[in-house]
Length: 413
Image 1 (cartoon, rainbow, N blue to C red):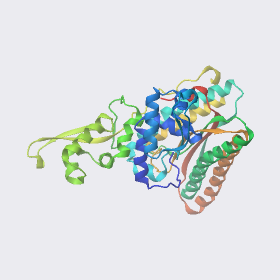
Image 2: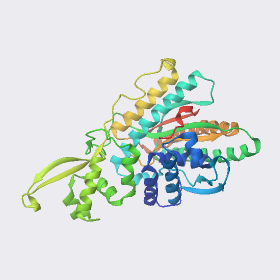
Image 3: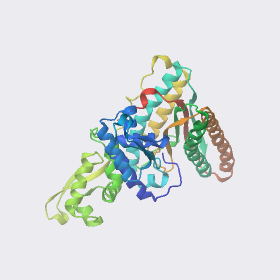
Image 4: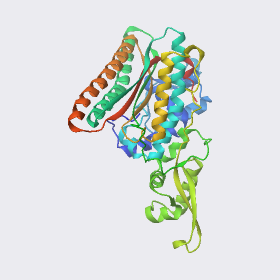
């Protein structure tokens, strides 16, 4: 998510805090679940798995130490814990990336992050579409709409998408309070919001033209690959520099400093191991007096087509639902390949898992419909402004959907 939202810490500090979450993939699941309601480490393990009870407990403690979880209350001794005290926690905030933090990331990191998000979200979205076509489940059908906006219209529209994202979790909190009084069981809902710039007239962004295609598919999971960049200023500066020019360890140390040359060399090797940078050339001579010097560039992902939208499940073949899904995935892929998807720091890409009662669900559906109508009205206003100013339109592609979450989507990594 990169909508413009207010946060309590500055952008760089937020990246450091997010590094704590991304360092272990399990932690994202813990924080998301505990933002919905309080849980103990034992309850989490019993419901979601995630390895061993010891592993779960260790990560609970680490997240509490770093301020991601807060202790709500303790129970015991006695009961099924055989005399042990059970500690219950709630998450203090959501682990999302706001626009200010997102724009601090080098372009290569943003585009790689977006591609990995698509590869995670598309199967979930496909699964929700397939299940909802077979069962009578609450849903707001997936939509994919391209709007033509000017800069003012873009700012208003993306602010409205951001407000809708915030509203999801406010509605969840309201539903939780209502359920305490009514006893109504809350359902788990998946809500999908995306708004990005599509290429116009076959245009391409030059932002990624200077990057090297990632030479291999990294074995390390993406959250654990990105955590060192989020948490370390020197690594972030190295990748930022390699987005602008090819550079060697010696040259970086001379021009940027930041730490010892051996420390910089270790970071270059770590970034190469994580497929964030790749060797570009070797050069001899210059100030090195004949020595061979290795130069590097930042990488971009290889965007390929063998993905969840490449073939349709039987139940959806030829349906308008599947055609919409294909159109949206193709639009995202085209924008990523052209460079327009992450050319702006304020694009939105969010998949939210929340718990709602019936009133909350109806409110969310109404909010999504209102959001779609608002952006349509912004398009009409932008058309009038552009007729006077001559400003060229920006194509904003918007995808919106909400479904009751699949049961198999809740297992912990």
